[in-house]
Image (tube, rainbow, N blue to C red; front, top):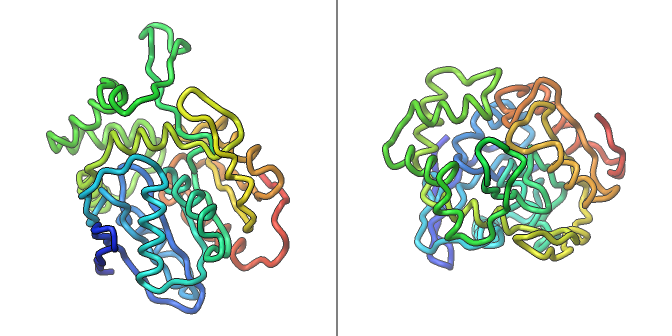
Length: 304
């Protein structure tokens, strides 16, 4: 599958992958520290009845990063321009982690193009809090940072990961993913090396942390953002997929998302799955997505 590139009207180049299929279209939006390359297992496994598109967000993969992003909406507006320029009109939108926040914001602003929304190990509707630990001996003492400058100077996350990027420390990046994401199942060696290559393309780490920290479409204010309440406008069928051993998106974050969506979302929690169901539970993930897209019944029932 080749990587195509188009230039948006805002001057950014957006790279994307496309797998031809039938009339049903799925758009996949990746998470942090990844790009469309990390969707390969899912794209290979999805039934041929679907045409699948997977763009690289600005600052990831093969896309440009000419103007730094300051919010999740910067990503979703890029997505909207890309959708329009390649001629998509109706599709099923899937967002993984950071991509979940982008997908929610896009659906809020462009609901007419989204048939169904699938949120996979998604960031909360109240953002992904960037916490500073005040006492290394007591991890309950934390403070939520509020500015990009504070986040950029954080030694435990931003400086650590950025340092691994700058040094092209492949083993260090694998150690991070093995500890937080691939805790039980790992990709095969060749695929894992390709994923590390992909991680090293990221050019927007601190900006993404800040955008996630200040994302809040709920009605509940926090230290970083008041909350827009826009989540109430998402009226398309929604499927929330979480993993029972996700160490990145906590159960509390998933509970926030489900609470904010009220009774408008179906929830499936995968067993023996962490933050990457694509690796941990690929067959089950494909089955659940395929069934949800095909079903005509109104959403609202919650299952576990």
